[in-house]
Every structure is written in C-alpha cells, then in structure tokens.
Image: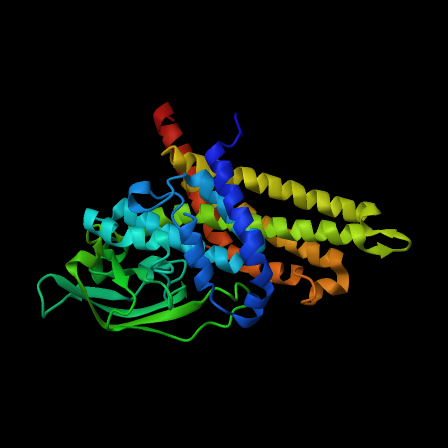
Length: 393
C-alpha cells in the first residue's frame, strides 16, 4: 500500500494549514465567545478553492479529490471547528448538486457555492420529530395549484447549519406522503425565497461560531426547476450525501482531536509538578501515547474512506467506521487534554475546554454513533449474506 500524498494533496493541505494559522487562529477563541459568524473567512476559503475541493474545475471547484478535502478539513478544524463545519456543509451541497443536479442547476448554483458568493450552503433534512429517521419527516411539497410547473413547501426543519446565512439550501420534503421514504424529494431553495423564515439561533454547547437555526416553510413556492433529481429520489440523494459528509465529520474530528493532543503535549512539557515536568511522568506519557495511537488509527480510517470514494468504489461502511471511530477518539483526546491541564483545563484560559465542547457534537450530527453502528452492521451482514448465497450455503 502506498500512503504517499500527491503534490496536489500536499498543496491543498498546506494551503489550508497556512490559512488556519494566519487568519483563523487569532480570532478563534473570540468567535467562540461572541458567536460571530465567519462570513469574511468563508469568502476567503472560496477564494482559495476550499469550498469546492472535490468539485470539477469547470464548475469553479478545485477538483483536487476527496483525500485532499479530508486533509483540508483536518487543518481547518484543528484551529477552528466552527469554520470547518460551515466549510464541510458547503462542500457537501456543492457535491450533491454536481452529482444530481441538472446542467442548469449546476451552472446556476455550484460556482456561487465554490466561490463564496452564496457565503455557505445548507442541508435541511432533520426535523423536530425526525432526526435519525428521515422517513418520518412531515414537511411536504405539493404541486402548486396556481402554476403548473411549481411546488408549495410546508413544514419545519431543525438543526440547520448556516441556515440563516446560506445562499442555497437543499430542502427535503414529501411529494407523496403515503409512500414513506420513497415519497421524499429534494429541492434547491434560495435564501430569501418568500414563505421560508428562519427561527432563533440555537444556544449550543460548542461550535458557537457556526449558526444553527430552525427553518419554517409556510406556503413557500418554488418552480419546477428547484427539484433536484426526480420526485421520490430524495432519500437516495440524502443518503449519498451523508456518506460523503461522514468523511468530512471524521476529518473534522481528527482536526479537533489533534489540536487537543498538541495542546496537552505542550502543557505537559512546560508544567512542573514535584520538581519535574508532567511529561516526565509515565502516567502522562501513557495517556498521550494512547491518544496519539487512536488518532493515527482514525486518520487511516478516514483516508481509506476518502480513497474509496475517490476511486468510485463503495464506501458507505468505511465512511461510517471513520466517522464513528474518529468522533469517539476525538472525544477521548479532548477529555485527556482537559485532565492533563488539571484545573486550568476547565477554564477558558486554555483552549482545551473549547476543543472538548466542539468535539462533543461530532458523535451526534451526520448520524449518531448508534446510527453508524447500525449502518456498519447492516453492511457487514448484507455482505455476509451475499457471500453465503454465492457459495450456495
């Protein structure tokens, strides 16, 4: 196996690292305290090609591939996870429109996403009563009685990242409520469309520089050209997008976990107790070694999933494994970092308490850890059943 990065992948990673160090780091803590949305920073990410890393150049993307995207996400999240989540969703929306959109939809929307003109993209799937179970959504899209080529969307969405700032929102709604999951369709809705309103900002534990809002649709009229794919294909589109999105969240978790490890090592080397640095104690050394080992394993899982996606191979199981393991490993890394800092780790004087708050949601969004285990188990059992059938057992 060859783990050597290409020159392009190295360049994308270095570009993201330089930007994070130079632009994001000075304001990361203040952004967490104030909840300020990083609009200027997202415009700058667009200028660098980091809002469409895996989008074709013809549509304004960098066309650098999924591995490059994973590396870039790690570098941005290592400094400011709030910026990385807006970056992740925007990349995901750009990819889903590129894959499932019409030529006109691609030309209209994707360059505006990748350049930062739209500021961000948003992904409106979850609802107050339908999180892990999208088939339970209540939002509907019925044919517009006033025009033959449009739809009227009614319903509510919950937990929408950048929902108040995004220039383009992918909205899932039931066009055939009696068909369950097979009756779900996806729509591209522009910011400011009449009938769509934004609720209050959620007061979150972490990722405070990333806005999370509910959306309400009350007679929201869109044209037939807003339909992404075909009617009834919405769940397929969502699941495909989530598979790729899980690589992004695994990469985000790696970034935060790495930041926690680096902070813990730096503190352990300079903090003196009982006449010697904390890092000289075997108990601290073992804790750091365990964290570094887990993060290395998580990095390989994330890159394997990215590699398979880039090659056009099935990657659902691999993406879920990466997201599951990386998010939980990051949580353990942050916990270890706070513990090594002692009382200081529980204060805002050091960044590890922010890392711990930011990391916690990675085990929830894009599918909880429990959902990831379901996805992995189903894929394992399905593959085993297929092998048994082929063997005549």
